[in-house]
Length: 352
Ligand code: DAH
Image 1 (tube, helix red, strand yellow):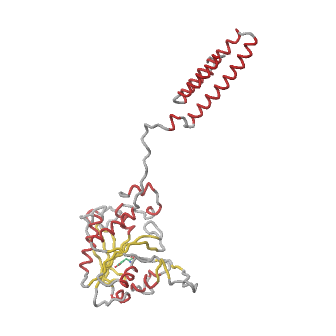
Image 2 (cartoon, rainbow, N blue to C red; image 1 turned 60 degrees about the horizontal axis):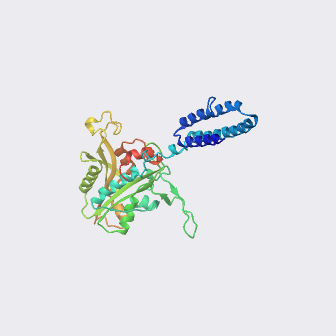
Image 3 (cartoon, rainbow, N blue to C red; image 1 turned 180 degrees about the vertical axis):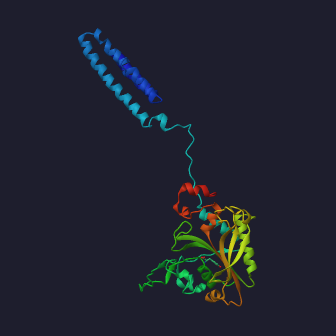
């Protein structure tokens, strides 16, 4: 009998030392197998007296059941990976902790702002819910301008405090950051040098347009500011953001709030410009990428903001941040920036 107690202790000890499911199986075969230790004890019972046989048989049965239970438990532990050996292997390298990354739009926005800060510009902001006056009227956008079309602009119904009067058509989500020009000029006498980064809204949604996107507006108002300053400033900016080899091209254009108005192109960063552009998809084989709208502040804009247009001149410009980021990172679908797939974002963001 004491022999059987020893056997039980042996099984318990061996199982606690087992390193894997295979070792447990070995123990099972050794004790419970057809030719195993317990089977052998059963086979030797023929030599015993009937009383001894009954007692030993019962004890052996108990031992067998107990061993089966212990072995099954050990096997289950390995099967579910909860065994001590599997759960904590202190020799394995730790799991890396993922630090947060700056979103590529924020990174681009930050670099744009930094470039202008170095040139002496302050950062200004304005409301995203604007009035028709600031978004259009004060910027010399005539009432029949296509930008006012319901297709482009999200109008907002506002309940005015107290009166609870809804003024439809008066309020809107700003369609550009240009209204910040007016807010700033109302508050600040020249010289004014500001950039205004922020969200803007348009009823647009396709691979290169999102209903919410970001712009950076620029305004420099001072006596004697000229178109030459505008060209120099924007050329400096493009070289800072995209590298020294980038060239800028200025084309005459039209914006209601500037006169003259320019559209600014930069040499294609993918193919390097005109001579190599034959198959370039990014610049559509033109060698140039349109990146900014700009111009000299229109006299009517100065008047709307309470300035005398015969006393000051000013330059203004505006750009889309997503467009800059798409060029910078070689992305052809703007929606990738808003889906927030970490696999996409972590490929682009360098810093934290
Ligand atoms: N507000 C224009 C737009 O959203 C961009 C722009 C063009 C801003 C010319 C300016 C400017 O300040 O001078 O398309």
